[in-house]
Length: 301
Image (tube, rainbow, N blue to C red; front, top):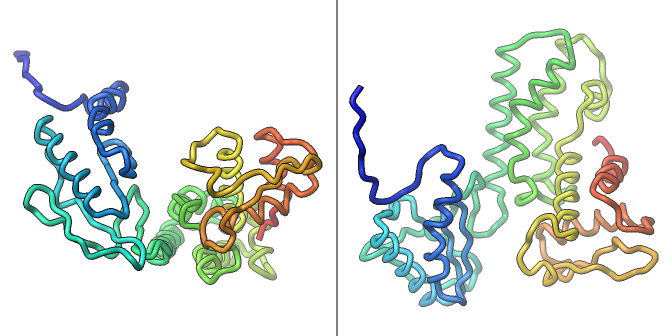
């Protein structure tokens, strides 16, 4: 076979170990050239810019567009969307070169369907429908008298759908959406135990028999562990002190204060639950100790 050398004017090797690092190096000068007042986030080749001033946003778009032309990395204009957040957001038009960016009521970003109200109801309803479909497909495709088999099926093929990004969209524990998120597991656990000829008295009893935990239970654990990682410095959250801070109690060193408890967001939902389980803790726990505390503090249901 004849080997030929081909010049590659731009880009990085795909599927390689060094590829992601090389792409970050390749992209680094673009990020430094953006206006210092613009807010932006980057994941691989996905860039989001946001600001309350439309002129600053358009300036950032122009810089990104010019950089992409100079570096022979064309923007995917058909995949670029405009999502307006907030009731006071202007109807300003934005352009890539001379092409207008189409406004959208919802945008799929890294697997999460985000709408202009940031309620995530559309995303949750889609995930519930997909999880129910997957659960029905599994029950149609497999039959067994072993409850552990059905438990493994659900954990492997359905839970990842329900739990991906759940710390971001997580609804309050007693909300209607939180109750709806239990529907796929309620349905699956009932059919599975009936096929195994095992009697049960309630949803919670079914979970015990299958050695499983409710979607609410698993979601609360994930939220609390993520919050622990944030306050311990293991995970980065920008301007974390603007949202929460330690209560600085010598007797209860893990108590947190939420600065905006009226907001329906991650911190306003999670901090009260956090405080309820660390209230009697007299020293800051290690990660493994905290995880054990969380497991013992949240009921299976």
